[in-house]
Length: 278
Image (cartoon, rainbow, N blue to C red; front, side, top):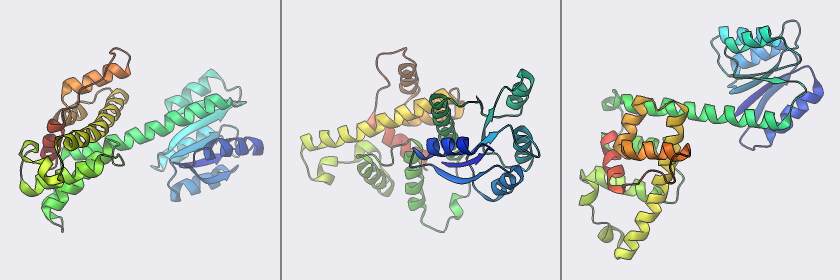
């Protein structure tokens, strides 16, 4: 995640820098005490999250946030302020700041707010990806590469959205999907024992490996549904891969309303995934 810091306090700059860099996936694109310099940097850099101290000159942090927003750049804003009035705080949130931290900074609160903001960005990106998949690639007929290859790429995109593209069972999932697309068949039509050259016990181990990744995908999907209030389009899409009941049960499990989550039906997932990429 790409961060930017705007703060006049050098010690606080270093404190924020240290907190951000604790996660090796984070990068700091800039640190300044000058709001004009920050504004120009945000216009040319890909900033995901920007920390802005309210106490800036020649104009305050709230004004800097509004100036950036008016330029049609929309990083996530975390403002920092000391003894701000309720009216100022209210206006800052009204203008769509993500969070407002009081000075002196509390490290536990800072780390928690950072985690929440990063997770929100990741979920938002997944939502945009799935909405794109749901709407369908209307122009996929004009792609320069083979249509079956395009379907395979869309299948991989769905696996990335589910957060399971790096799972141990994913190479097998992709191999099976390719065979189903190439042969234009359903999951039941595949003779996995013959394809993999193993016995029924080997097939059982294979399906268990795949099922673990599919379970992780269901859990990630449930998290997205909780975050975005079970968006109808996402649930409609999820039903093809898992079923409404499985997704709803996984959501209840996350909320502590069930002792177990949703069930995994391998056949439904594969048949649904092939259907989604047609």
